[in-house]
Length: 112
Length: 112
Image (cartoon, rainbow over all chains, first blue to last red; front, top):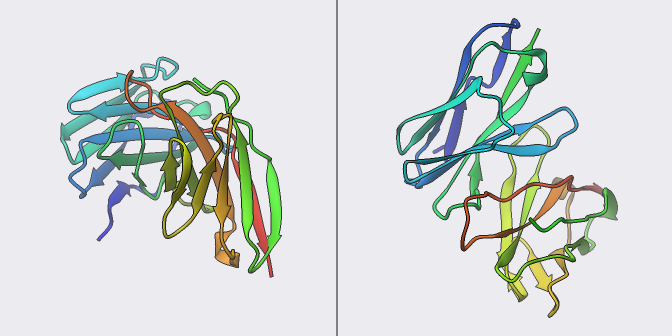
């Protein structure tokens, strides 16, 4: 069974579009995260969601909005996509806050 | 947040023990040290976490000297499949809201 799954794996879209990436974890963890890995391979935390409390990284543009319908899901919605949003986005989860235990396979977003 | 410094890259032959050292001179009293491994086109994988002295699991060992200003990840008898980027993270897991921050990592290449 996949611990943390993401869909889609690849996403190619035009500038200005709105898109969503879905994440699901079947581990019963209380905490979920979204990370962005850019072309230089730097992994940066975007959001963490711990026991219904959303912790936002202040450097993330408000075009990005996480949505958690329940504890097992943390989706990422992106409005008005820009070229600089092209990256690989990783979802992760953990039982203990601040130490991601399992990462998803990533979603490679390409904005044209 | 304590800043970490790791070698950019390392090479090793199969079967050798590999030690990757991470410097964190301004580590705080409540900071823990966590290591992750990332294979190409995959999300990071949690390897090991420690606070002081030595921690060992089925994958690696983590050595932390008494002053805690550095730590060493030890991989016994590496194989080609251990080729990956290894990240050292330092952060307070007991208070505050900030998840662990990834640095640039060390790219380990295992050669046959």
